[in-house]
Amino acid sequence: MAKQYVCKVCGYVHTGDKAPDVCPQCQQTNCFEEKKTKRFSTDSNVYTIVYATVIVIIVAVLLSLVHSVLKPMHDENERLDTQKQILVALNQDITQGNPSQLYADIVKEDSILINGEKKVYYIATLDNTQKLVVPLKGQGLWGAIWGYVALDEDKNTIFGINFGHEGETPGLGGEIVTENFRRRFFGKHIKDAEGNLRSVAVLKEGKKAPEGQDQVDAWAGATITSTGVNDMLYNSLNQYKAILGEE
Amino acid sequence: MALAQKTKEAFLGPLNVNNPVLVQILGICSALAVTVQLKPALVMGISVTIIVALSNVVISLIRKSIPMRIRIIVQLVVVAALVTIVSEILKAFAYDVAMQLSVYIGLIITNCILMGRLEAFAMTNNVKDSLLDGLGNGFGYAIILVIVAFVRELLGSGKLLGFQIIPDSWYVANGGCYENCGMMLMPAMALILVGCVIWAHRSINEEKK
Image (tube, rainbow over the protein chains, first blue to last red):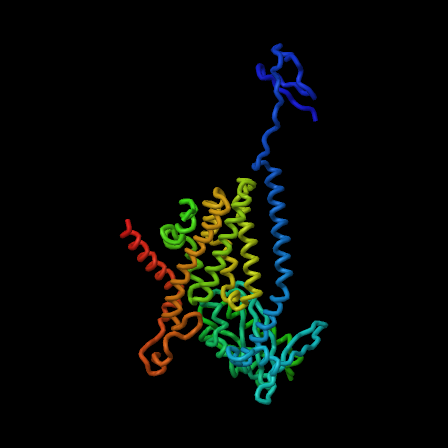
């Protein structure tokens, strides 16, 4: 690229490889100096865009690296957490002893194929009776809610239940995990007298469920989360119709 | 100490006279959410300290290269990356606590203390001072969390770090005359306690002047 030379006296700009000896405009000698290209600026658009791109790429690589290194530990923790949730649904005390051992002793995992999809459920042996544990999945107000419901041998009476949530409002929807709420389900029936699967309705105090369906009170102030629990129970139990032995 | 006055100030200031929570009233929202028990408060305090110190260092290192127009975005990206890493590490090594803190770890990103320190200090100071400033502010924040959580857990559930402190026999249910203060478990109590700490802090500092 050709350099630019500016005359210090009159400001004449000469473009070329070398400064002319005499300025063609003001006739001065030795008056040219090289025009400096503008100092590199951190405010230019190109720099800003390149900078942002580089930063984002570095961060993305870093984060995926960290995630893939820690993934096995996350999975292990999640597996243990699932075991604990199932044990709580079975009304087992998980604060004492080794929950993992207890789980291995009493719970067996099983699965069936429904419409080509593998559905996992669990069978637990407690005091020589078999409990059927069905996983629940649904939507609360802010995110996913889930749970496990343990049924007695008649595949009808709820023996225990446990809920979890991603980020329901603390003090309102978040209270579905408390024993106070879980206890409301104990002993309820998921089928009507004819043996049809009806699930358990979660209703505001004062409302009545249709004839033949058991109901529990919703958590006051958490209407949408409670409706979510209601729908979750209904939908999830229906997916497992085949093993619930509906007559 | 041989440290320059400014360096000393960067670390010690936020611990007392320039405490981010007590004087600048920053980061109150998380102080309210995680202080029901001592353990999550400790973990939160440590996490914030680590993140504010590291992000201060990173921003201070690259402060001359950051384009001014997107400096806040760059700061956010750095903080968000660090928060995500800390959250991943917590999930791997302290799963229960991570679950308990749930969204609040992620919300460190929006903790005003971090943005405040990055913008006000790290952008214009060298790495060493920035590190100390970050540590000082982190500790300053953690101290308040721990004080509030200590009172709330002790009076609210009679425990500290999950261990029963108030003897069982004191409780009304067991024939005693003591009952846990349910109010302490309410979020509002965190604000009232922070208010009390600010009161004490200001009246002590007032006397010194």
